[in-house]
Structure formats: structure tokens, C-alpha cells
Length: 448
Image 1: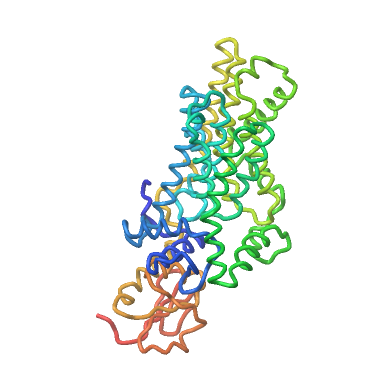
Image 2 (image 1 turned 30 degrees about the vertical axis):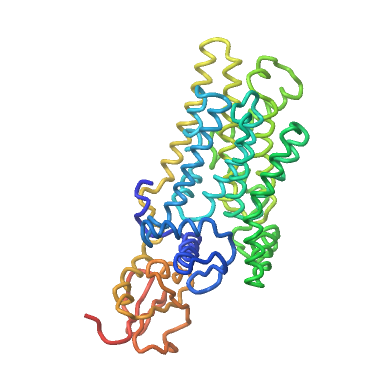
């Protein structure tokens, strides 16, 4: 939350969140969301509705735009710490948030107004709930709380990113069927109930806007599986994109987790070391490690790859790592070996925090030149001058800062109004240069 409201709004996706949230803020409708006057139905409405509520509290500004995501980012840290506390115990649970802090991409996304922080929280809560439930002698299991938490997490993820969240029940339910069948039925009901709000939104939105299915399913999902797609070509990357960047995004924690997962999995299968086998619970460990590996494979198959898409694995990797180093600790018979394990843990935490510190932006001033344009023309817009632009990516940012639609047109010649403002990336005859990127032409009586 430090300096969360300073700087300009982020790139394209943050401007999209700002615009969709403005539409809900002004119309109170969750259907046919608009950005700068154009319908945009590419994401479910949860984070946009929460951001509209945040506008009510903090105003239409950068702080109001980002607060909901910062809250969900914080909740992801709390959930992973709680999951570790309930299973491996407080002695090891304190490591969880410090290890997760090394995932600088999650930290940055949590300070940016996009849908990923909410999705990561929902998926983390869903998987950690099942993990805690599978842990022997879990008090929470006796109270029947875990299926409810699973359902809350699933509903949150569905209403944030859509069908991708169905990975949670599609993985968890078969696992429970084979390894813990007596716990299966509550999770089936939780999955059904959690899917109802998203299903209702899908149906109603599809009826209200006939092109919805071709955009939402056709482009947002089917096109992302096509390596020859012309949609978002800059994000089409090879299947090994994530594994080749694994060290950069996860540092020691992620790489060690891969090694320890293979090691503990081998011991589980072969029963080679009773001391190690008794140091961790094999069924919940198998569920946890299988979840992040399966999601990693699934997301690697898609053609469109962003470092944000892989974020749900990192909370699960964090808890898997803790189970692994606790097993290493149980093997360390003398104090020297225990100090060695402690040194590895401290190195993992230190290197991760160093990476986050290196990538952290104190004041996220991503596009100051675009905000500068908005602030320069805002006094005239408030006097009643309509604003136009020929810069397509500038328009939604002006929409947010000016809190009104800014039409995108090829030039000022066809503007019918007697008084207007036109912003362009190209020099305009009679216009004024605002900064290195933009020019402004004001037509009408000279304002005071």
C-alpha cells in the first residue's frame, strides 16, 4: 500500500480496468461493460465492481483504482501463512510470507489494477483449503470449513478470470476420488455452488450482447491456444517460455522446490527412508505438488504467455518448499547439517527479497507523459470543452483521468463542436507541444 496512489496508471490493462470500473461506477450495471464508450466484455465483472466501490470511497484516482488489488495481494500472503500454520506448524509457517515475497511479479501485480491478484488469491485459497483438509488430525476439517473456503476461492477466481479457474475442481475432485473419497461429496457441492454466480453472469451477458460468446470464448480462450493466431501476437511464445524463465521469476525457492519435489516423490514411491517419509504427509504433499505441476503444464500449452499467467503456482511452490526443507531438517542429524539447511533457507529468502527490491517501483509512474496530457487539458474539459484524440491507446487513459468519454477520430477536421480539444501524437498545425510524445490543439474562445 506504500505510495499506492502515486504515479500514473499502468499500461493497457490497467487503463482497461479503470474504464470498465468507471462504467459500473456510473451505471451500476455489470453487463455490457464499456471502456471509453466502447463495449468490452472480455473479463468477468468482480474486480471492476469492487473497484467501482473503491471509487466511491477514495475517489476516481489511482488510489481508488488500485486498493482492491492490493487487498487481494495481501490476502494471498495471509492465506499461505495460514495454510502453513495449520499444517507444518508455526515453527515453519513464519517462512511462508517471506519466501512468497521473493515472487516479485506477484508483488508488482498486487500493486496494479488488473484481474490477476484476485485470481491468484482465489486459486490459492481453493488449493490451500483442500491441502489443509487432507492434513491428518486437522481441526478445521472436523468443523467442515474447508469445502466452504474452497468454494469461496473458486467463486472468486471464476469471477476474476473465468473458465481458467475450473482447473481447481478439475484437478481437486479426481484427486479426492482416488485418494480421499470420503471427502469428495462436500467438494462437489462446493464446486457446483461456487460456479452458479459465474454461470448466471455468462447466461445473462450472452443474452444481453449476442457477440459476447465469440469475443469471450472465441478470442479470450480459443485464440490463446492457437500458435498462428493474429490476436495478441506479441504474447505468442514457445511452450518452454515459462521453464526457461523459471529461475528469473522464482530464484532459489522455485528451483529447489523442483528438486525437492522429485526427491520426496521418489522417496514416497520407493519408501526408501522412513525418517523422511514420517517428516511429511504424503497425500497432502502429493496434492500440493501435483497442483502446481499440473497448472504449470496447462499454462505452458497455451500460445499466449505472460509472466502474470503463471502466478498461481508460486504460493503453492512456497508451501511445497517449506515441506521439503522441513524434511531436509529431519535428516540433518548433527548441528552442522542443521546450520547448513538453515543457511539454504536464509539464502532462499534473501535472494528472493533482493529480486523483489530490485524490481519494486516505489512510485509506479509507468506512463507519466499520458497523465501529463490529461492534467494539461483537464481544466478546459471541466469548462465544457469536449476532448478528442487520434491516439487509440491514449483514449482510455484520458477517459479515466477526465472521467468522460474521449472519442478516437483520425483528425480534427470533422469535429462539429465550436469549442474542442484535440490530442495527437503527430504535430498539429497551430497546436501546442505538451511533452515529447503529444501535441494539443484547442479550438474555441481563449479561456481565462
